[in-house]
Picture 1 (cartoon, helix red, strand yellow):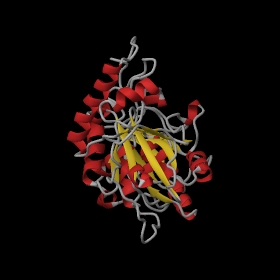
Picture 2 (cartoon, helix red, strand yellow; picture 1 turned 135 degrees about the vertical axis):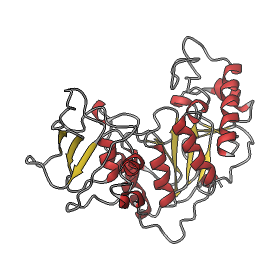
Picture 3 (cartoon, helix red, strand yellow; picture 1 turned 30 degrees about the vertical axis):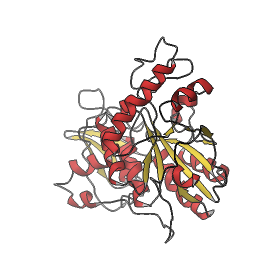
Picture 4 (cartoon, one colour; picture 1 turned 45 degrees about the vertical axis):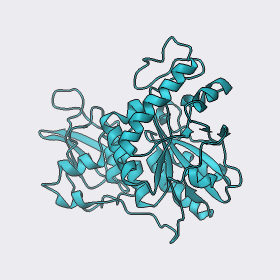
Amino acid sequence: MTWPRVPALLVVALLLTACGATTSPSPTATGSAGGGSPSPFATVTPGESEGGGPSASASATGTTYVVRAGDTLSSIARAWGTSVAQLQAGNAAAYPSLATVAPTPLPTPPASGCRAGNRVPAGSQQIFSTAPNAGHAVALTFDMGGRLDPGVEILNFLIANHVCATIFPTGAMAQTAEGQQVMAIIRDHPELFEIGNHTMHHCNLVSGGGGSPTTAPCAGITPTADFIRSELADAAAILEQLSAQEPVPYWRPPYGATNQAVRDAAASVGYTKTFMWDVDTIDWKPIAEGGPTAQQIATKVITNAGDGSIVLMHLGGYETLDALEIMVPGLRDRGMLLTSLSDLLQ
């Protein structure tokens, strides 16, 4: 998100509140007075550590963090396992200016032209990894079947920059506290966001297994047509209630696991449009486990997305928020319209 940089000459005290840090954001961070994890409070001060990197030290009231050049509220929040909103809320009394910091939109063409909600009729079965005859347009799609941080920040970034997108939530994740926040934002912005069905429990519908946030009821089964229909119908009821949108006829199979039998079962309850992708960001994988950096994600999308491309991302993608800051202007510089799947298919 384009949160303004923390000025190097500004002393800022940030309290890492309810979602506070439980691990150190850098090798130089020290633990709490008890010798365990860092305190859930941090005082952020200007300057550079002697080694040129981030530094943190324990104090009676918390952990003192030395701000580096280029730090943002967003990057500090991620490093300490909290959110920008919590940093702002926890420090509003001492530093009221922080509470008014809002995302600064990237330059947006005067007529961005994207639309959402104009979904195509059910019709016959179709499976899409790209949209034919879409012109110079790309659909950014976000799965919502597991980790949801930083989903709210991602949607706020898209709103600030007038980027249309299609979201595929599961019923189970939509019911979580953070999921309900996400769904409320979608409900409030039908001009930008549309939803598709990602099933109730994120099971592998071909071979069974998988599942999120638990493996029930996915483990130890071979999904039947009735099971698939139930997974879609149960999710649809929740998604419609929370977003005020009917997901039919759009859906995306969890893990991309699909075959004709699965699609036939989905089509029998109205889900005739199966959406895959041609650009996979692999943003669900953290850097520590070999996943891509924000720059790598953005470069991959900017380089590989063509006319009618469908880009796969996740609202819980580890580097997705920072990647979007690079990706959105990069695609627009190529003359690409960033839009919804519905708009892509019109």
